[in-house]
Length: 245
Image 1 (cartoon, rainbow, N blue to C red):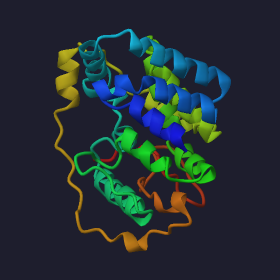
Image 2: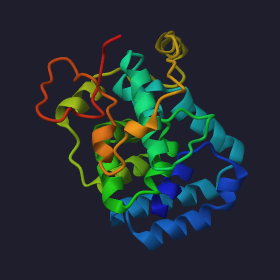
Image 3: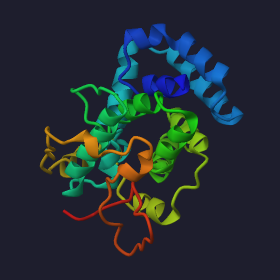
């Protein structure tokens, strides 16, 4: 589904190539009509807004939102695991899922980087893609809410992802995310405190052969335990929120 490639491009660091492709991106969004009308209109409005902006201004805005604001990180496991021990295994599992489907990810990006995640979704059929997107729906909803508070048109991307997934975000997990600090990007003291944590390493020699190519959701085993106070039954949730360090 090319819509996922379009959304990936919108969430990537702005470049001249992106600005040159804005009209083509809009055509894809309109032609496939995968996003509902309200969200589709908001996405096209965001693209129109980009047209009238200087590239360096767009890059500065992007950096403030997604690079300097941890609560808006485009790395999905930042919101799921933070810096817990589970994060490394989650990276291994997701990387193996990509490889099992023949997707070669950019080695410069971590597997959970959302634009990369959406590139992978674009290779799947719609039902598989929806199943994939349904799992972090609570993360997408929280990001949309935080962007709404900042009057950012990027909110439309995350509302679109939730809508395409046809998912009701897990209320309990969403409340965990809502309770987390959401400092402004110019709060340098809060920024320093947020990033005073060690980087997570993950293995390079993991074997993708153990991935079930036919059951994508069952093999995205990022979460090893639920958030404190949450109970699960049957299949463990995938994009749950872990606070263990």
